[in-house]
Image (tube, rainbow, N blue to C red):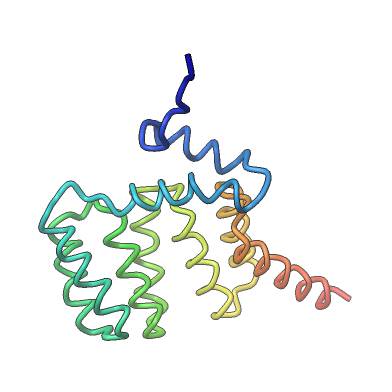
Length: 168
């Protein structure tokens, strides 16, 4: 009798995060990453899901004002929905409103401390603001959760090289 491997949807969130930690390479981490990102987007509300779809469409069209209008409603309707705050942080970042973006990332991380995407976003903002030590800490935090994040690893290596160059 052949046994089916459990579906990723059957695994707990903790098990998925553990899969990220032990994945030997980026390709083997992708299925758990995709499932976690899918779960981050789940709101348990048809209204929120509809608004998030509208916000994504607006963001894809670089209509940041429209996206923010919708995302403001999302975080008011469900202040415990981490992805609403994270998406709004992304829209603020796109408009170079770094203070607002950081505030929304902080809310995201209060709700879901293992939100690796929010940590990478925080690192990107801090790097942009030339807050190198804090950016390094944010990228390291993201990599502690998801060691196969290429973008975070490359940004961290770049910042560490810059820091080493300054210490001479």
